[in-house]
Length: 217
View 1 (cartoon, one colour):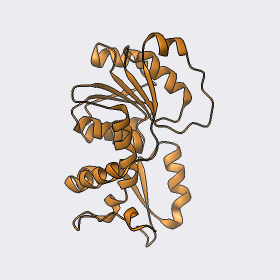
View 2 (cartoon, one colour):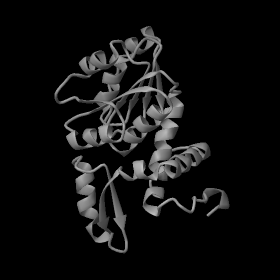
View 3 (tube, helix red, strand yellow):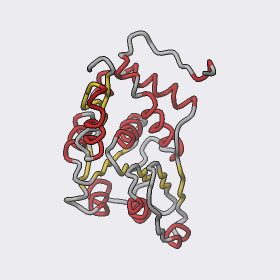
View 4 (tube, rainbow, N blue to C red):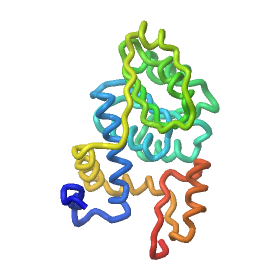
């Protein structure tokens, strides 16, 4: 492995929290690609590990964040406990209504981290003219998009994938600065022999981040 690929960890950083470096770096890169600035009104679609990381980083950078999920009671409740003040369950309220209730105007930035193609179209529809929609989710299906809405609204559509050396460095710094906060993202700790159970928990949204321990957890 190239030496440049190995990043030193602060001695006090617990290894389970350090294992969050890669997903948090992906979230940081998404926030960078979206060019989130202090005071921006930001909607994050999807309260999974990447979406949660995006919301936490955007909040830390001074944005006004609304995190939305669909029948994600446990993960949205955890988001509130972690300091994300505004959440919405789209099984209970339409996205446009949640945005209006929280911001009273259209958002400046939407970051999609659901992996559900329809979320991209929904995010574009609520975005202010000239705003930025950044797609982070990996989608197994094709998307039909209203390009007139994109063009006439002078909106921007961007894609964010993986991360950068700067993103990894920032992720380690954030984890080291507040390991107790980020440790809360690890909702389940399982032995490696229960890996299939862990994946099942993640797929149905019952877990935020499942950590597998070779030595039994």
